[in-house]
Length: 205
Ligand SMILES: [Zn+2]
Ligand SMILES: [Zn+2]
Image (cartoon, rainbow, N blue to C red; front, top):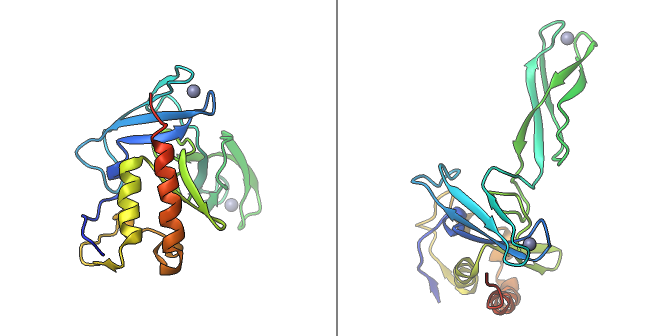
C-alpha cells in the first residue's frame, strides 16, 4: 500500500487536541482557530480549553501548564565578558539567579528570560497539558491530537511504500522517530492505534 496523503505539519491537526484536564484529570478538549501562518510556529491562533467533566473553560495565554526553559545571555556586570547560562526545563520560574563569571570570578544575580518549553514531550503546544491520546510501544510513547490525526498516522505507518518527494522539514512524517517508521514495529503500532481509536469514540463534550 502506498502512502498518498499530503505531508501535513503536526500543527495542521491541532484544531482539536485531547488533553488531561488540569482540574479533574479527565479528558478535556482544546479547540484552536489557526491563523494564516502555522509553521514554524502558529501565529495569531485562538485556543480555548474546555472540560465537560468539571466545567473548566480557559482562553489561550491565561495559563501555560508546561515547563519553562530559563536562559541568560549577557555581559558580566563587572568585566563585560559574555555570560551564557541555560537552566534545565522547570515549572518553577525563579526571577533571578546567581552566576559566577569564569573570567573575573565575581558572582552577581541576573534576571533570566523564560521560554515555554515544548520539545520532546507529549504535551499540547498551546497550554502545555499532557496529551490524552497516547500509546506506549516498549519504552517509547506515540501520541496524537485527535482521531483524524490518528488515522493519518496509521495510514502512514501501515503503508509499505512511502513517497519521500513531498516531504518538507516541518512535515509530521518527516519528524517521526525511527522506531515508528521501522517495519518491524508496524503491526504492533497499527494494532495499538486501532485500540486507541476505539477509545476516541468514548470522548465527547
Ligand atoms: Zn476537568
Ligand atoms: Zn566578569
